[in-house]
Length: 190
Image 1 (spheres, helix red, strand yellow):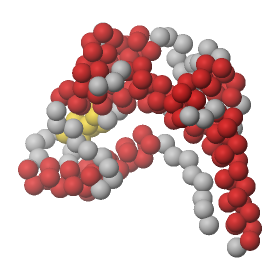
Image 2: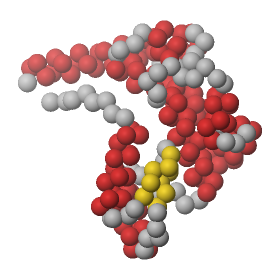
Image 3: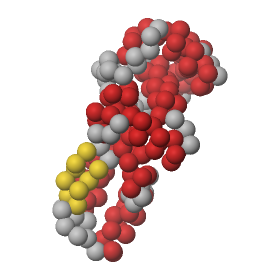
Image 4: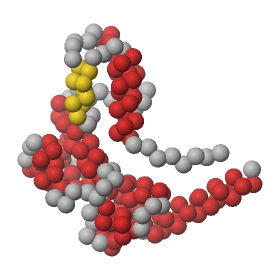
């Protein structure tokens, strides 16, 4: 039997972090998305135990300040795109500058220097991943998806979707529906 699940990755990570910090008796405070303030010094042994515990879940402690800041940029973009409401009407550059308290020029050049891609490309990839998730959930029309993801039109969404995945959103929908019908038919026979 297969179950279709929906999960909030931010909430899941937060719960894992809380469980591991509490298990190791580390006093902490969550200060932001992807940030924890440890309220006292911890031994090297406890720090290693925390690293190993988090590593089991694919969570990595980032020690390089530049990489940590890049992760904050990525987390802010993902938070914006995966918000169930429509994305902010402000320009992404203004949104990121306001959220991260740095000029967009600084954010953009640092992001490109460390990741070898642009913030714009990262945003497109995240929007397309979100569009794929929305198609799989089958709750919204393409027009509603385009509006929620701040595309100027369905055609704009479709062009970026095809350029990124090699498929149109409609072709992707057909594939998902076909897979669901095959699974349903297989489960009926079992």
